[in-house]
Image (cartoon, rainbow, N blue to C red; front, side, top):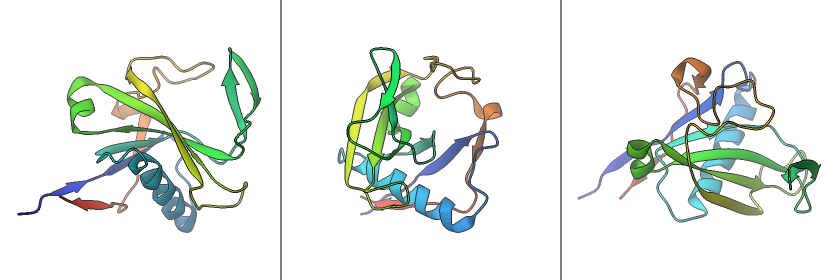
Length: 141
């Protein structure tokens, strides 16, 4: 017997790519990044566009691993516990959408406040998010 799990994709309010092709590629990279841990994500928050900086010891610096997108994901357990895992999906360069490497931070409460963020928390409530329309990857278990 198989079970279908729908993955929902979110962006901070007003930050969803307007170009459908970019939206599709961003979602694909987010899904591949979350699956890098062999988990079954249920929700993914796409937090950034391509960039090559990171925060080390509280300072913004060039990321030694290069260009990436920043995401957070939740599996079924994290949805229930209101926690998420932050991750980076590294690509070859600023224009590539092929996953080269993924990194994953530990679980954090959704209420954690992002540094220099205008949002209430890293994973805010639905009033501060836009859900990607008609974009779903399904997992058959």
